Image 1 (cartoon, rainbow, N blue to C red):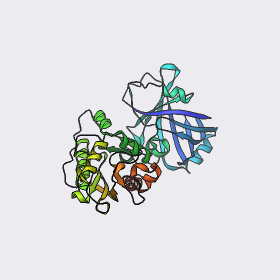
Image 2: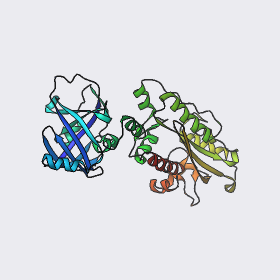
Image 3: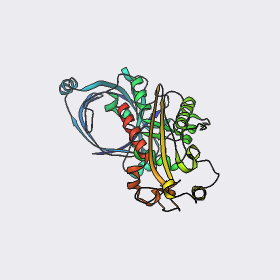
Image 4: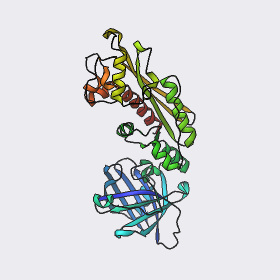
Length: 361
């Protein structure tokens, strides 16, 4: 049986007028597919669940449920992984003939409340408008699956894991946000605009240091100091440094001139018009800084090249059209796949991803 659902955290609401049923469950297997034993009121079940699809807004899985006896349930309960989950489920009618299953957890998960809504089709889920007592959508947050909850000691552990599943980035640049979302598919990415909306306050980010490393770290620290210690904060700084111009524009790459990228590139070419090819060496550097509680990490990579004599290519942005590689092509003349293999930014992000994965296990 295919199950299509969304899951949310919820506000405290008056539950006294709703019917409920008590549930006890545990897991024989907590990875995909999960195998669960459950007491649902006075009935007992063995359930197999296999994830079919998880995207940004929806979770779909196959579910097969087999009735079992109380005796079998008690025997299997002794063979389960992690903790036994005890919760009380309230059934609440919603608009459009939908029902909300609100779970109130007990014991080591005391204080946690979640709600699930099941849909007949994926299309139905797209038009779902959550009630005002629904909070954060945790549908695709693996930390809130019951199989994951069974492995926690307490809610503090859940909070730690949940925060390590979110990345706050000090940018509102749509290109950078998209890049983060593509590389960090297992994490929730929050931009500056997202953070400001979440915390209902303006976030100010400064970058007035003399090196890429100092700038990235200053931005990460600045963001962290304004949002609190529970969030992983990421910031970056990058640019092109040209030897013949004493490293200019360097840390000022993005803001040395109030103009679009193409105009700035033409101005750089004008500055180098009398410089020979062998003296047009340049360096593309990206630094990504991470700040989380007492952890500060720097990821840095530099790609060497030369400044071309004219702008070439349509596949890039920034200074890509004048950054010439050893093969004679500019970064804007090669494919996205080719660029990703050598891009300092991509290499830094890959290192960051591997670091966060080790911290999120």
